[in-house]
Length: 333
Image (tube, rainbow, N blue to C red; front, side, top):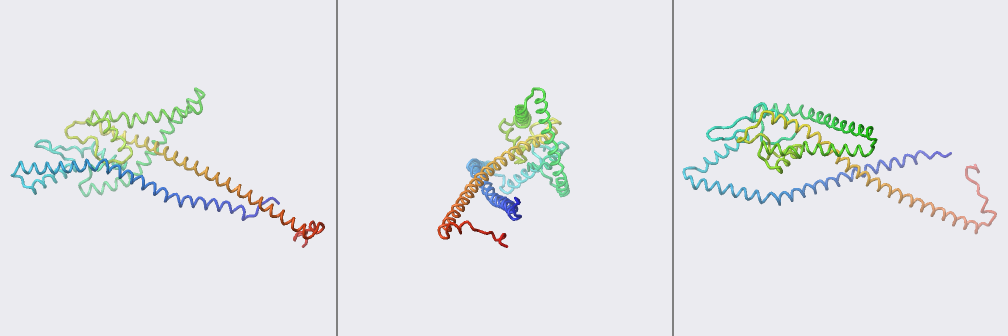
């Protein structure tokens, strides 16, 4: 007797599915507009900050070029241009001039190991690349299988980090009988520890080994761990410095664990943004449901009022005896 018809139960589900489809259909263009706006904002700011320095550097290089030709009349412009191109190409291959000799070492085992790490982590600094056809083909195959392996490893390392944080929080809850405070304290400690190990302390090592400032070291740390990898700052590439054998290997491990930690932080930020979006959608849904409920109440009150008016009219036209004699169609049959 109290069961609703099948169409009535399916109607809200269809409406909900339609609502989700509409939100997804409109959500992509909105996100795309926000994305392009954000990229455009970054492009405008970077152009305003970096374009003047680029123009000054180009003017300075051109001035030095003409001064060199003016002071050394025996140099011919085509020969000088060929020399400059040769130096640039040699530098891209990892060879630099040191007096009357050249420096090698970018393709020794430690340098090759660091290049392999930068390849499968998709950092891709761009300062070093294979110059032979066989090396390029091997790099493609190596990255094809190495990138998924790297993603699996990063996921496992991240899960271990989360598990360690959860175990520490559970231990504090049992020992000190803390509940929410223990979880908050451990998460804060994990965040601060990660900041120290992967972003705040490594610039001190780079200051000692590379001669970079703290700001340059911090910039390199974030650009590397976020896999942006511009290539303007790369460790172990200064020919005037001597690096210990463990240096690049330790930095490779730092990159691996640092990427896993930063991935967790980025995932936390994404979850926070998604939860905020869901909260806004829930509030919007609640408002819409309240409005629909108010509209429904209004319609039902209007319907009742119309029924009362119709009954009053029937009472007045038919009289008191006929107004109460109504037979339902089913009963009449």
